Image (cartoon, rainbow, N blue to C red):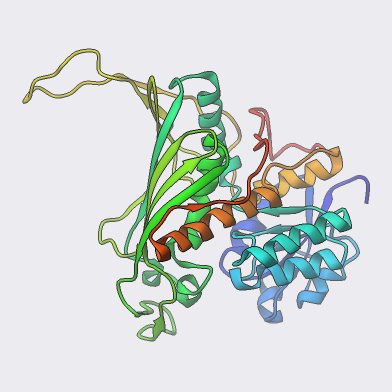
Amino acid sequence: MTGGTVGVGIIGAGNISDTYLENLSSFPDVTVHVVGDILEDRAKAQADKYGVAASGGVDAVLSHPDVEIVVNLTIPASHVEISSAAIAAGKNVWSEKPIGVDRESAKALIEQADAAGLRVGIAPDTVLGPGLQSAKRAIARGDIGRPLFAQTSFQWQGPEIFHPNPGFLYARGGGPLLDMGPYYVSALVHLFGPVAAVAALGLRSSETRQVQVGELAGTDFPIEIPTTVSVLTQFEQGGQAQSLYSTDSALKRHGVVEINGTEGTLVIPDPNTFGGRIYITRPMTEVVVPPAPTVQDVVEVEQEGVLVGRGLGLLDMARAIREGRPHVASGELGYHVLDTLLAIEESAERGAFVPVESTVAGVGSVPAGFDPLARTV
């Protein structure tokens, strides 16, 4: 198709499909035509809930003539398989993160799409929200001088306290690093550029965990990955970061991202959200002797843009298809993030710095005037 709304089909009708269906149905530039799942009753229930015309199995999406972009919401271990099938069917792909669970198949997927003249887009698209994009513009303006290093933290006790079937989150391709790391690494790459090398330590607090809620409550499941990972990151352009990813902490501390520059520290919203408070703390101008309280100037940074939710990256890709321009959350960017995460795993196993072989050029941005709720195609 060359004009009109961009047709979308969704494969995977699990928990995350709700937020995608809710948001995509509010974007005038896209139309969801079909929902597919290996459990066809579940696909039909989601299609009926959101007024989607058709539902069925995976083939119902791949064979639908009006679908230009397949949204891949399957589990990480199935991402490449489903994305590859969509490309083979002549469809562009927007995939939940990560792009895959190993370098070889992920790289082959990008090569397959390039050969077919099709696009691959990879979540997270939170980095395209007004929060991080406004922070990115603040850094580009020089609001904190030259960015030097970042600190990030994601820590809590784990998703088994709310998820009815959390085993896949502790399987290969999951865990706090592969499940939540894409949000933080993607944010850092947007702000500092590509990663050059990483060093990490990892630990596993137990060999099994137990489901806490739902029909499987009380059931044990195995732990295949480290549940705490501490990371040092070196960026190609010279910046550094230190990060913590843990599901072994009784203290819940999510979304900590602080960018320290020569003229101040920029605090940005949780990278698993699309927006929030952004502010800069300036260096002290006088010495404060305890017990007098430390007083530092805090400058609020305006958040520019329309706040929506998941599906924003797919919308940018849909508009890019119509406009003939690159989309921001590209497969190449998704591959670099995966490559970085796997290098972190390897470093934790080897106890040494590991170079990140891939790179990505010209990490794009969303303009301040980007309005998901406007009709543009």
